Image (cartoon, rainbow over all chains, first blue to last red; front, side, top):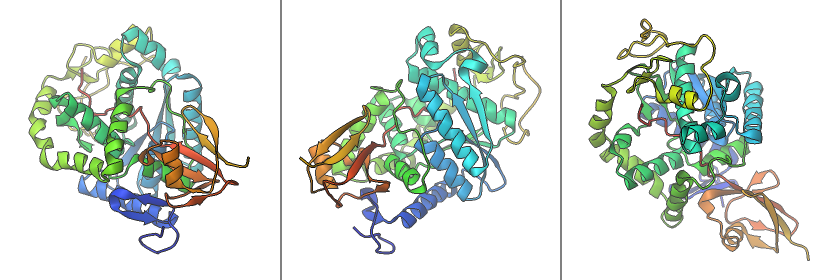
Length: 328
Length: 76
């Protein structure tokens, strides 16, 4: 197999592109595809402060690495989930990468800072672990971005992630979720902007990127995720992809081009009922937000001194410009 | 019998597979979907048409993560 660009021996074949690449041109492909996603969806601007949600896995470390190579000012945020050795090892990879690039890694530890971990929190709140984990991540990434004055939160969601989420949402016609499934969630109603620069790259490419660049990451699967629906959707889509390369790309980008807008009014309508959480100030449709309820049920506590964050509902977030007086 | 050592994960285990054979054949024999793994020989990724020998140490590394959270779940 020869590299499509230079005809040197290839290291990877990407069937949806009907192309093979050597190490050098594969890395360039990853950077170019990320830059194209950033440009096409107007995700980031050169002068912005970027916070990358880092798990110690391949996707988040790869997106951090690519953004730094593209010249963005990007710090990392690692959330310790309290999932035993898995969390300990994940944290080590995140710290090692940050140190190797001389970048700031903000750390939040659920057991230490909030008094609960994902396994016990999920049991107490009667949620599946991935639900408690996702809820905690969404809330704490938003909070850290606001507190730290970051303009945007970057996540490592790739094409496979987005296609699998879309598949699940379509299976159940969750139209409110479909209206929000975008590569960019704009800053609004007290939420920071959130972007997914890896949507043009597959999961296999991100693992290959880390191997080629020598970025060590946690290879083992999260023990809480075993057997979850998301993995099942990915298996199903990969069964299609192996006989019809490009299917995942066409499914996701076809949705964005032809169907996404149809579902947005419903999703936007839900934002109208937002008000500050009575405990932490985060935007919520309830009196107390789902995260604070989870912490309470899990027997945890908000960090000392944490009260309602100064958020002006309805104002645009960004570099402190969207902040108003605390509403409590 | 000499055979290549193949490391598989989730769960982590090692199997012996007699060579020579191509990467694509190895994956078929182990019933692994090529879209869901990388094949690594030593420290280097190898594409599907690469011939593998009995003396090779091979890792079949899964690339599928199940914990991707949805940043866009509705606010509650």
